[in-house]
Length: 573
Image (cartoon, rainbow, N blue to C red; front, top):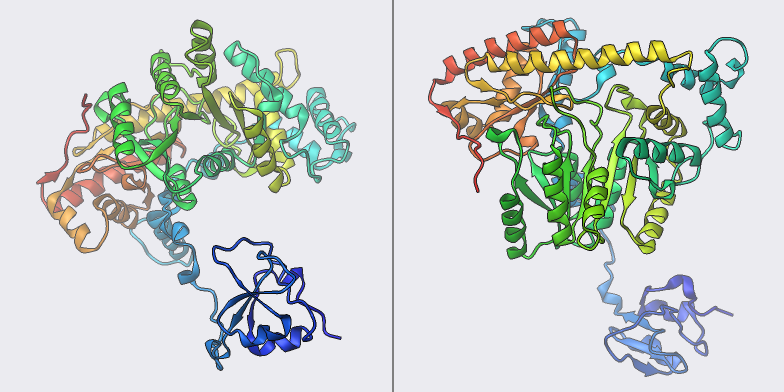
C-alpha cells in the first residue's frame, strides 16, 4: 500500500530508518533524480536497501541515474539546532561588500541632522544644503508644464475633451493611451516597452546622429540605472570577467560589479588634463588586468562625465571606439547628461554617431563593434527622477544576445508605463507650430541658463577658496573639486578608521549643514582627496554653500595644521 519515492523527492537524502516507511519491501526504490554521478552506485535488491547505511545504492531494475543515498541514523542529530532568524550574517558577501557612497555615510548623517532640526534641536545651522545627489526637483527645479499636463491627462483621461489642455497635449496623451491598447497607464506593456515610444526614440536618435536606429534594438527601462545593471549582469559570466570603468566613476558601476561578482578594472582619467584619459592608459590598464587573469569584456564611458563634468570631443570618442574594436570590448556609453552641456564651444556627440562614421570609413575594422548607449528622463532639462524613465539602444549584437536580453526584460514584466511616456515626451518635444511650444521653450531655456550660470558660480567659487581647486564644469550636474587635507587630519581620520575625505565631509555637514559626497566613493588617485557637489540648488543656496565651505575649510586647516597631504593628478604616458 505504500508508494515508492517519486520525482518530487529529487535529490532527497533518506534516513535508513525511513526506507520501510516510504516503500514496501517489493517496491522499486526510485529517487527520480535524473542526475549523473561520478561514482558507480551499488545495485541491491529493493528489500535490502535499508541495510546499506552510508552508501550510494541503486535498486535493481533502475538506472544509475536514479538512486537513493542511504544515510546512517546516527548522522542525524536527535536534537537539531533551532532555526535562527535571518540577520546580516546570512546576506551574500557580494551584497555586503557593495558600496554606494552617494547615499552612504555622509548623507545618512545628514538625515540624522535633519531629523534633529525638525525636532527643534539647536545646531550650528538652520537648514541643510543638499548637494550630494542629482535629484533636481528635490532642490526646487520646477517641472516642465508640457510634460506634467500630458501626465495629468494620462492619469485621468476623463479630463480629455474638456478644453482644459492645449490641443497638442490632448493629442499626445490620446496617442499614448491608444498605444497601450486603450488600457492606459495602469496596465503592463510589452517587456521592451510601448512600441510607439520605441519608434519615437528611434526617430530621435536618427535626427540627432544622422543615422537610422532600429526600434527593435531599443529597450525601455525603469531609469537608466536598471538598464546598466541589466547589461552588467549579462556581461559578467563569472568572477574572472572584468569591466573597464573610469576613475573617478559613478559608483553604480562599482557597486553593480561587486554584487554580480565581476571585476572592476579602473582606467585613470587625469585631473590636470580636464579629466581625460589616453590611449596609453587604456592599453596599460588592459594589460595589467590580463596579467591578473581578468578577462575584460567591456568598457564604460560616461559622457558628459559624472562626477567630473567633462564633455568628450569627437576625437576622444573615436579613441575609445577604436580601442574597444581592437580588443572586442562592448562599449557601455552612459549618455544621460547629453542635454547638459554648458561650456562655450562644446557640444554633445554620441558614441552611436561616431561609431557609424567610423564604420562608413572602415567597415571591416569596425564590423564587429558592439555598443549599448543609455539615456534617462532623470537628468537633462526634465529632472523627472521620480518617473523612472530610461532606455538603452543595442548596436552590433547577434540574435542570441537579443533573445536573452528579451528574456531578462520579460522577468521584470515591463517598465513603469508613465515613465515610458515621459521618455517619449523627452525625445519628441512640442513642434514649433504646437500651442505648447512657446511656454515649453521658455521653461526649458530658463532651466538650462540657470544650470549654466550655477556651473560657473560653483567652479569659480570653489577655486577662490585656499586649499580647494576645481576644474571648469563643462557639462552634467556636478563639480568634483580637490581638497588639500593636512597630514594631521589624514592621521586622525585613519585613527577613526575612515578615509580622510570622508572625515572632511562629515565635519563639513556637522558644522555647516552642507551635504556632499566624499571622492573616495567615486575613486581618485592615491594621495588626493575630493568631494562631489551638485550644481542643482538655487543660486542663493549655492552662494551660501560656497561661503560655508570656505569658512569650514579655513577652520579645518587651522585645527589640523597647514602641512597639506596631496599629490598632483597629472597625466602620465
